[in-house]
Length: 43
Image (cartoon, rainbow, N blue to C red; front, side, top):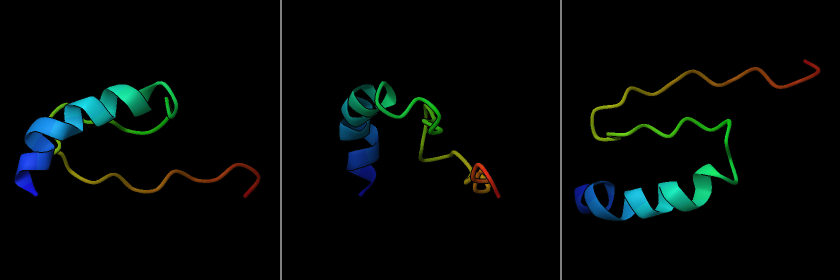
């Protein structure tokens, strides 16, 4: 799994960052800390 984060994740991030601009895309996901969920609109 660590190989995915080092290699494939960069390409996936490039493809999906434009589609999901509000999503948190860490530059180094191996050391990034999880974020709390964002409150949904209307709740």
